[in-house]
Image 1: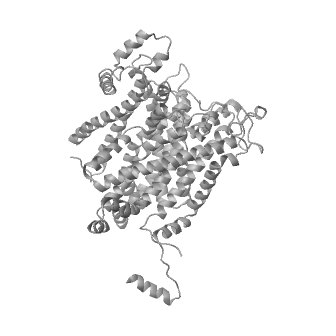
Image 2 (image 1 turned 90 degrees about the vertical axis):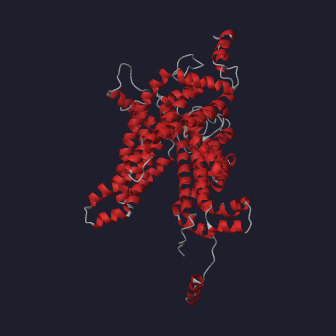
Image 3 (image 1 turned 180 degrees about the vertical axis):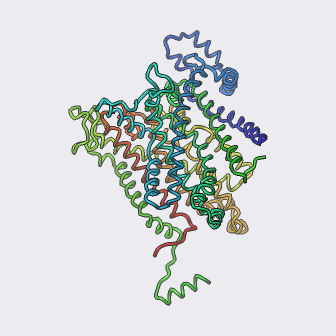
Length: 321
Length: 301
């Protein structure tokens, strides 16, 4: 197992190098990274030249890439060209905010998805099953940004009409309020609800399919033939085995969750990773964007690795060596 | 033997046996899928409206009428107007045109790329397969929306063709993997061996023998890509880094409406259109998945 983890980690290094090189090249080819500085009247010719020297902007792209890579790895993700500020403190701050959003919504979505998927599978073709199926099709077709806006419009209008503040529609907290308070829940309620509705569709559909596959397998028939109570068959033989593939789906969805975070955080103006990324991209702060992409790629690779490890632990037929 | 016996039996009962091609079977199975047929009609109607937007829309998409600004849905303005008095029903119809263009273009081009890469990887195997599949892995380790945002911000310049091209260059990975998988298994089939023995070249085997047998997943995937591309394009436009405001796209309309939460119709109608298109295209894709599965032969007479 240990050898497997080490091998996978070693394998992901060239993948990261290749992707970061390709993105760096594509980004660098699009224009002058110092264009923003040159447009800023507060920077004179001399200081721009100093910055260009410092970041090797006068060198060809592959050379620039290696200097960037060195800066990123030795200097905590490097420095933003536009603001001349270190990038890591910003990323650290927004990561914790996005983690609150993503982890909360994922836990809720997974729990609801499992419950609905299990009941749909046990009562296949029942009214409940049809309702859940229709809802999940709607969830698949629903643009995340539109759903977020609907919730926002609804609660803005509730506030305007009845002066009733159930959920806040923008920001992360009011001033002087801590991270663990009713205020934070009121702020995160709508973004979390948006992500839950979107992800619930995926998880419940998958759970239903996975349950149905196990229900029709031979060992379940054997369990029933032994005369076990139905709830025992469902709980011990079907449910536990049907859960295993869900691990992979959840892990593969991490990229999708980050995409969802970009959208919901933009709608609700939450100071998280997605909001940060979008604003840095709009400012063409290229080194901050590169650092963000690097961090998220590492997160995605680690999530996939974690899924493989958990999968191997849960499913005794799979043994890594 | 069996077939002729069945034919004789059928003849005795005064029934007729009709030869049906694979396509005829597929068409009959699809037509039996009522939800898919209905969705196909709806989505065709929507797309035709979009294609003939300048004939169907009651107003131009930039016609300003300040007297009728900020009005809710009415008989005169079905989807209401924005603060400049632009008719949102007309703008939505023009928006459909942009969105369908992007969706169809992305589906076509990404299918072409995905099929080519999948065919080469699956047919030749070995280092070609390894190289191409590592390339798809690279694309898949990145957060998709973020990378599309980056490229459309840097290279898109708000133009719908550029955005569509960028989407197509990232949308082929799923199909490439599917086609590769199908080709890997088809490669071992007897008829491929027979074709080889008969002296057919690689290209002929790939295009004449193997590709028609993998058409099902390709068509289904292309259909679902139309919906996905429309959704992602709308998300890019909504975030302000895709298609830019003077061009009327459904995402752009939602983007412009979001500043006025009191004017709910500016957000509701473009979004609802988007949901309807995507929902219908997904249902059509589902119907096609059932219809094009050649292992299903049963057709109700």
